[in-house]
Amino acid sequence: MPHLLSIRAAIVMAALAVTACSPARDSAAPASRAAASPTILAAGGLVEPASEERIIIPQLSGRLARVHIEEGDVVHAGQLIAEIENAEYRAALDAAIAQVALREAELARLRNGARREELAEAAAALAAAQARETLAKADRERIEPMLARKLASQAQVDAARAQAAAATAERDRAAAALALLRAGARTEDLAMAEASLATARAERDHAQALFDKSQILSPIDGRVLKRDLREGETVVALSPLPLARLGDLTRRTVRADIEELDIGRVAVGQRAHVSSDAFPGQRFEGRVARVSQRMGRRNQTSGDPAEKQDAKILEALIELDGEPPLPVGLRVDVFIEAPAR
Image (cartoon, rainbow, N blue to C red; front, side, top):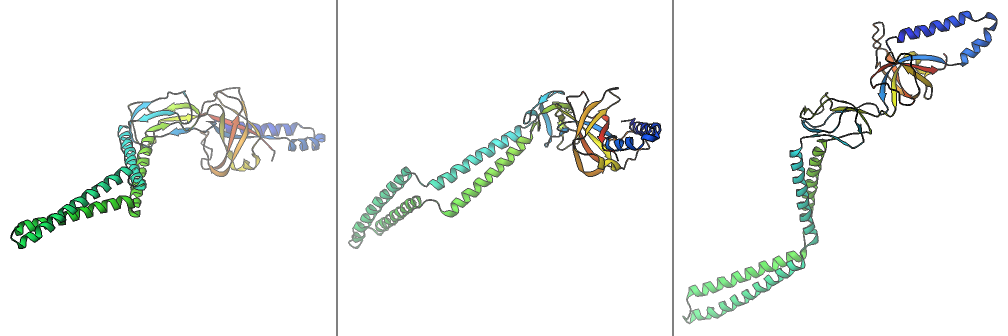
């Protein structure tokens, strides 16, 4: 790309020379043929992987406990590539899971009502309370007449009356307990239990999300282009320093900057090729796979001080044929077979 301007000038000069050397008597026919044939449109570009480069930045701060990748490794979507120390996140997740199980059991108990064994036990308790009440009332009725005949003291009569009242209260309590079991849970109790379960589940999901963020997964099938951090290093959430950079190198693409005056001549499907000073004498064929729908600022510069840095460009994605040896990030010169003006 450093010689992009000189290449453009050479193309223009060659075209002028051909025109000057053409015989005058044949000027009409060659002119029509030249108008129909494509011309070469030159632009600067940058090599990218087919998936575009994916920059992996952890979402949690902490120490890298394990990094499972090296530069050049093949990775698959969903593969674990690194782990941040997560003992606290694991403990919080386990506690939240246990809390959900507890709340689920409580709600199930309310919905299912009392078991037959519990009903039988409550019925037996009521029968026993009724028997004690009958006995206490009989004792009271036996002692009360004895007070008038001086055969029993007032204290004995008061004790018998109190015992009978206590037995009646115990029988009422047992009867109420049995009725409550038979009636089942109240609507408000069920609503409270359901709300508690929903809260527990939300806390579990939050704990799960934090734990998952400590497990760094590959988002794509591809290859490790660069690894920036190693085990034991501390990462900062959403830091500009990434863990690694991934890309799909089964195919390579070039993101070309099309000048504003040339955007009407570029379309999907046009043949193109790229070259680079790093590979002298070689050209790598491809085609225009995508053309952006929005103008933007220039992505690549040639280093020429005369080049306008604020010029508006339109991005075009060139899909290269085969598996060329161009490294990701290499600046290249792009030549597109475009229709003549």
